[in-house]
Image 1 (cartoon, rainbow, N blue to C red):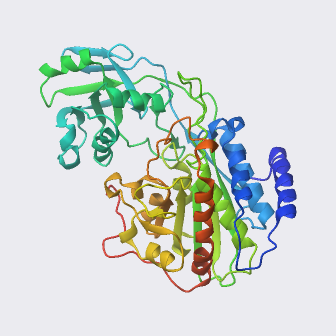
Image 2: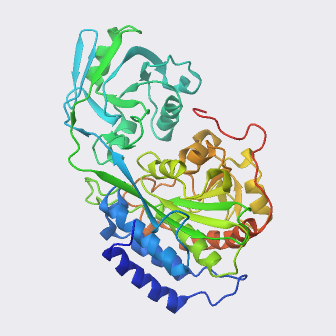
Image 3: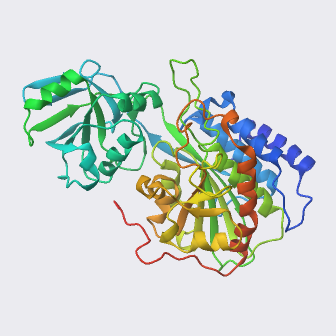
Length: 469
């Protein structure tokens, strides 16, 4: 996609900035300036960007901003591309709010008896299977089952109970309304989260999630396991095509046979959603404007030095929040053959220090899966093992789509789940900009070394993930 007029205006501003603050430093001793970091955040997390919702015009503008910065730094268009933005069509059903559940002699109505927390946009049918929430991680779930998750705990423990079911072949999860389900609804603006998919991909496989009122939960007591649950979801046709946008820049290396390093983040967030407290904009300053800023400033640093042996691909994905659609699309339409990617380093929420990590250190997901993290640390990167293995962060970021295809791909993150996560107060005021700047600074020379060396990262034994791990 070629630069549009708006992108050209942003590009012009970026070129002026680059001329005024440009890279006077040489290939080494590069300093990441705090004002550069803050400038990116001021734009990306501004209220005017309306939370950079997945597959929206705000996401497109964000991709244009990132693309214009890539151009200003001297990056080239990636092989086979004529511009810096990759566009992919997406499909997302529109629901009419009149879903029903039929089980035994009970017919439940949406809004009166239950709320749809998440919907795949197609009818659901399967046998009922009761599981205690505390046993969900180890339960043997029948494929195609509709799980009734009993005694859902409050707080973060609720998601820990639900997450294992995402990796099973269940078609729906029913649970009783409580503070945790109400929080889930708040995080989606009181609306059902509807699965979005790439236009050329099958319907999303994640289970439909339903919160039953206490009265409806009481009706379930007399229903036997194995009874057929039928959930009917009514859709309204999508009115116009929708697209998501990846911003891509390329730094060619001197050796075309040495492979390519991929540095990535996601540029979208949750958009604007009505809230009772009056703040409707989910700015996403940390998630993941911070990661996008890291990619931009690493591009700034590497492009300002001498040419590296390996090529470096810089990608900021769209629609991560809608299910990793941008990274999935890149995996299927990469401008660089996946076999040539020697490593992928993803940046996610690096705007705050995790209290479980050593001072100044980013957590690195899947630390023991490959030799990439330890080697980067050895060369000065402020990275350490992820202290939350039970949260499965390795599988929950854009690195995972490529890891499944064999690329040694990991995520560097700040605080695993900060208090501002998916909240309207994930804004500039809640960022630790000195920590963020220092973290990016610590990665400049290690990434330069990786791109200029003959070291080939490799999976450790049993480290490469397999589908439905």
